[in-house]
Image (cartoon, rainbow, N blue to C red; front, top):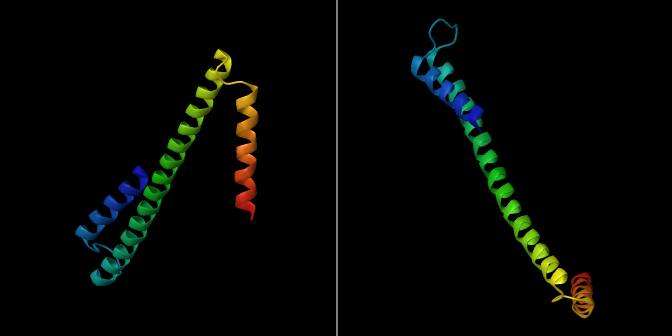
Length: 101
């Protein structure tokens, strides 16, 4: 993401400098630079969306891990035993069957 920001800053600096020393007209140069800027902004936006999605996934996995650790602790303490596990398995099978319909 820092690379995108650096590229965008470079494009903006080029726009300010203009088309010095090139064969392009200043307007063509500005048009090309604006297109590059739009492309970089789209890339930045896409990167931000992917980052947000990764953060959501990480939070979800963190919650799942916490739940599993809590169950494991209950199992080790003798609070969560075979009857509870069997009941949970039956409940989850019912949920799977309902989703498949």
